[in-house]
Each structure stands twice: as structure tokens, then as C-alpha cells.
Length: 244
Image (cartoon, rainbow, N blue to C red; front, side, top):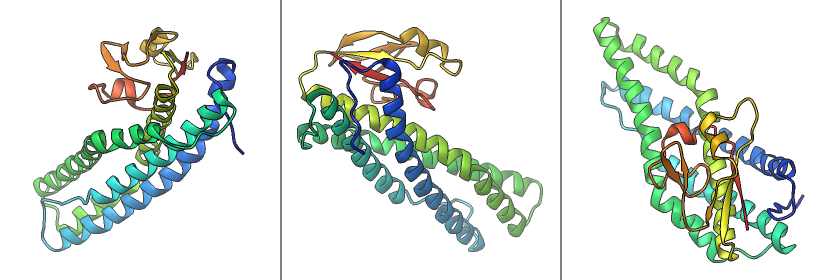
């Protein structure tokens, strides 16, 4: 189904409904891939531990490949949906997709580093505690297995939701710039789950080449971390934007 994101005529509810429908399918796909990466990581880490290594090496290439494919796919999907909504046709990807790919190539390394460092820090803590308690390698391996089994569902979903949301808004933002839109407006879901500072940002309108100011942080679009926004504005964000 070729859905359209009509930022000019659609109601806020319709815009969120279409956006969420498109994002949901990508989130499911991304979560499945992320679970597979975690499973492979677990096997590799356990092999390293069995070989006597305690300073683990986490292969970041699967994450790099995932992020590039995810941003390219989601960005193009949402950019085309915006094109159908604004022009009534699905514009062939051109310069706006160049911007999507440039973004992930520039900022993707930071995203991958944050994910792998979080995992590595957690694993080193498990090792340290195990050694302090006098545990053997088999017992530490069991703790590492428990760790991966615990994070596999919730963390894969958190990463999938957050990054597909960023890629979706990046796709529509890149297309809107390419289409000559002059301003963008922050739209929060405005329900019981909306964080207070995102509700305060609702309806904030700025020139399209300028960032939003949200809780003291700057974002070019909801979910953007290129200007240093932190998890308080990024994780599980559901905000979108509209253009004029």
C-alpha cells in the first residue's frame, strides 16, 4: 500500500496514524535484525571467555551495516510518502536521499559506538563482579548468557523504535528541504506518555534550516542527535514534524 504523508492538508491525527503505520513495519524488521546481532555477539563473547580473554572485542561491522541499510530503507520510504502527500506522486529519490545517506555516514559511527560501549561496559562489570566473588569461567559465562537473554527483547526494541523514528523523520525532513519547504513545526503526540518538554515544544515553528530548541537542546528534527541532543530527547520519542 502506497501511503502518503500530507503535511499540508492532513489532520494531526491522520499524520500520526500514517507515520506510525509506516514506522511499525520497519521497527519489526529492525528488531529482528538487532536480536540476531545480539545472539551472534553473545556466541563470540562466550568463545573469547572460553579462550581466556577478559577484555572483550565487540564487532561493530554488523551494527554499521544495519544502520546504513535501515536509514537508507526507512529514509527513502518516508521521503516517498512525503512526496506522494505533497506532489501526489512518488518522486524518484534524488538529492534528498543523498542527504539521508550523508547523515548516517557522518553520525552513524557515534550511534554504533554508544551501543557497543554500553554493552562492553555491562560485560566488564559482570566480569569484575564475578572475579571479586571468586566465580569460575563457567559461572561468569552463565551470567553473560543471562545478560544477553535479558536485554535481547527490551533493548532491541528500544534501539529499533528509536532509530527507525530518527530515520523516518530524517527522510521527511530531507525531502521537505529538497522540495523547497521554508519552515518546519514540531508536533508532539500530546497524550499521557508525552514527556513534558516535548509537550512544551509542540507547535514550535522555525525556518527549515534552523534547529528546534527543546529542553535546552537543539534538534534539526525530532530524534536528531547531530547537534548533541541526549537520550532525554531521543529514546522512544514519538514526535514528528510538519512543513510549510
